[in-house]
Amino acid sequence: MNLLVTGASSGFGRAIAKEFGSKGHKVIAIARRKEHLESLQSEIPHCTIVPCDICDKVALKNAIESLPKDFKEIDVLVHNAGLALGISSAQNCDFDDWERMIETNIKALTYLTHLILPQMVERKSGHIITIGSIAGRYPYPGGNVYGASKAFVRQFVLGLRSDLSGTNVRVSDIEPGLAEGSEFSLVRFKGDKQKADALYKGANALTPQDIAQAVYWVATLPPHININTLEMMPTSQSFSALNVHRES
Ligand code: NDP
Ligand code: 8X3
Image (cartoon, rainbow, N blue to C red; front, side, top):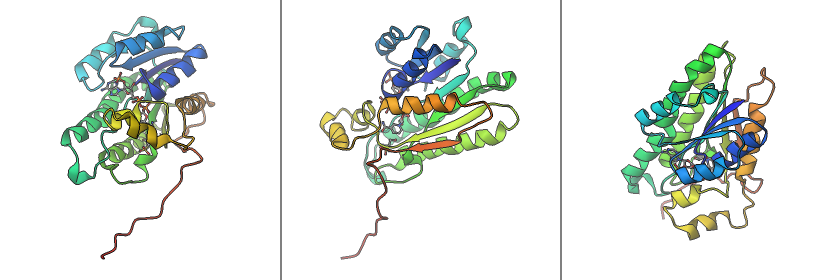
């Protein structure tokens, strides 16, 4: 199987690349930080790296078109690259943060799908797996555009399922909750490591390896099974009561 995974320079993407790579699959690893990709490549027998900003449409198209011959056929496309920026209420947010989340989590994901889907349909095989989030299902204060971008991802996946009826192409959205061991919170809190670390204290959160195993399981099920969505949380995470603001 040939895997293409975005955001392979850290966290979930790196773990997904290693999970497939260690089982003998060929890996195409995309992210912006070349040196991180090179270090990943040294740990995987068959890996080609593509240092690229997925928000740059021209660069992304060129990169896909110039893949080495034996990596051109993509069997599993994992849309993992993504980010949350900030945790402020909507009225206090920086619009540049919103725009970057939309560019990365939505626009780049749809563009890459558009580039790769036709070859899967033509071959009548392939699997697109997105990394959504529980934030796309359950709103929380400060989640605003991040949560909305992941709700888009979920609904896009379900829409693709409808369109791809009869093509044998599978589509799945994996929706993790709190997960540590990646740079997600460091990015969200803009480098504030103390805040990022505090979020995971005592939580026994999910790990990148947990996500990678879930992705691998979904991708290697018999071809007649399609996991539409897979929501996963650490056992320690659950739901709060709905908020009621009361006049004093
Ligand atoms: P990380 O910050 O560790 O990984 C994000 C990856 O995305 C990095 O490899 C980064 O690489 C890449 N990336 C970001 N922007 C771009 C871009 N413009 N072009 C190319 N690559 C890009 O976080 P996680 O591993 O935790 O996150 C992976 C996915 O999982 C995200 O979509 C996130 O929303 C989702 N998620 C995370 C959860 C968590 O709690 N950690 C829970 C649920 C979902 P580089 O900077 O080198 O480009
Ligand atoms: C990341 C999970 O709950 O921090 O998508 O939004 S959460």
